[in-house]
Image (cartoon, rainbow over all chains, first blue to last red):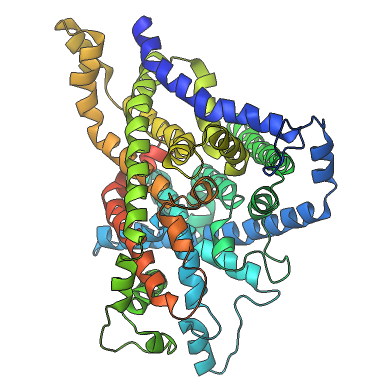
Length: 283
Length: 271
């Protein structure tokens, strides 16, 4: 008993210190008018920050932008990740090398990825627009109406490998018998995929999508590296908006309340997903 | 027999296209780091005499100091996480200590938006006069590295057969000695993978570093974003700096990819 608690106690103590306490402190900040530039004790304002966050048009615009970004990025990652995972599963030649190389982007510093693409896609000096001009197309990747799509594409470049990694593991843990039975029964490759592989893969797929969506909701580095929220406020995501409120305008109380709204959204997503998984198991 | 052949052509084409997509940006940035400012204005230029001015300027610009600070933050964060997380993970795996509350807490801590925790860290750092030092950055990085490392290790400990340890206890080992001498060697590859993955997470984070230590104690990603002034002259240096940040973690990643799935799923999926 003492051994067990002795092993666990440092972990609990450290988690309380670095997660529990800051979390409580953030809750306190969110009900004050704390500003980084003020001296003296911050005043208690109750739920004012939350009210102003929830009625802030800019916040909801950033929220909409973020949701659109997550849907585009994670959607592309699911389709591409599934296709690549299926292709890799049958790969025999240079298997380990191919996998290692295709998975590499997910380990790269996101700010480096953002800056690389800012450079590569730049209108004047980037290689991709230069190539497109060569075949007579003029496309400004960071122009109005396109910048958010470009950011989602950057996200897909970096994080499709994560999807591949999880889906490949999922594919390899699918038992062989149902697949063979379906093939013996004369099912086409598409039929086998749709009726056997995909349903057996869907638990892993749900988890992979959830993990990616939660991470993509926090997008910051790509925006910081490329558009800084522009053109206009087109690519202003929640995390970037919160950063600006807190750091550039020093309004920590308000920024904390925004962070809590984001946290509430994250928790709702998690609970809904796990409910679905539970129901899937019960059925 | 024609259909399977068509599928395999599609399959190989897809893999080649994916490989080209992965390689082109990285190759491009490598080329750019060896170009002169004039050559940088010509995006189509692939063959040219390599020029080392960008590398020379980046190596004398304090980027290496920033890389060193990132290394320190990563090593301290991972060291604490492995020791504290490892002990806790063992207790959770073996004795179901703390029940589902602890397990859920660890899982929840991984998905906390950094925007929630960063402002408390900042005000505390100001109050203790530790702002713009590595101390708050290390604490902030612990807040996401510790839960992830612990989660990984729970899965790896779950995979150790209990009979091994029981035998050691019968042989007269104390619980702690059995843990250190019998169980730990079994999960050593898992600990290595968790350590490298945790280090990568810390090495790659910019958000906390940018807010908690934007100045003299800037870590590598923050220092790199300093090249974001986007004057033509800086691009070569920026490319070199990006490579300094990218190459170590990509090489390290090759060693842990096999263990990663098992770790992320908390041991539920083995590869």
